[in-house]
Structure formats: C-alpha cells, structure tokens
Image 1 (cartoon, rainbow, N blue to C red):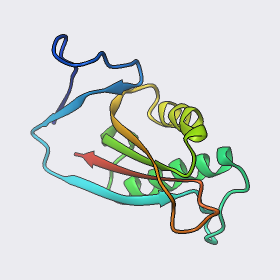
Image 2: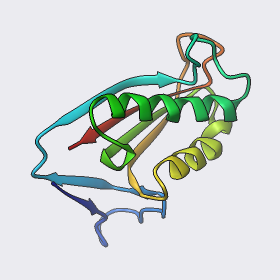
Image 3: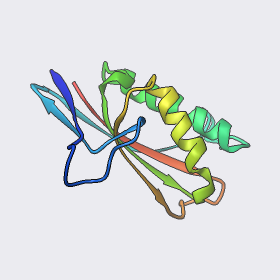
Length: 128
C-alpha cells in the first residue's frame, strides 16, 4: 500500500504542518471506517477534563484499530466534532501527538454532541 499526501502549490490555500488537503491511497486491500469515538473510559464514563477525554479518545481509537490489525499509521482521515471552538487547539495537539506528527486529511466541526458531558467526538478512516 502506498499513501501520498496531496497539497497543490497553486489554486488553493496553503496547507499547515499538521494538515494536508488530501491523502491518496494506492493498493489498499482494506478500509476501516471508525464511528465517532468519545472520551469514555471502559465503564462508559467521560473523562473529567478536555485533556482526559482527548487521551481516552485516542486510546479508544488505538484499541479499535488494533482489533483490525491496524495502528494509527493506517489513519488517512480524521473528523473531529467539538462542542466548543475553544477546544480546537487542544484537539489538534492531541491529534498531532497521537499520529506522531504525521499530517492527514482532517476536518474539525463545532457541533452539539448527543450527551452534554461529551466534549469531543472523533471519527477516523484507516487503510491497510
């Protein structure tokens, strides 16, 4: 499998170090679409802070990926749903850390979550 980032030099605004406009995947045999994942512990309780929830989210995503024989290196797309735009910087930092600095196609949306205590929800697409 080959993964290439696509950041055109002309005709679109510049990408940032933690963001790419597109990810091209060639030769993948499998795609894994991970549902929106919340910062809940094993008992289904949300982390008490934004940082704890972000840590739980990425821990949960790693577990889900692992169940399919994948790692965060297989992630090609991330969509984050934030209850508040003030969470954007912490969310981006958690994503960059979780992906070991690898930039992927990403979108962050400010939206209500199904439960008020869920501060962020993250879904990913992985290819393998």
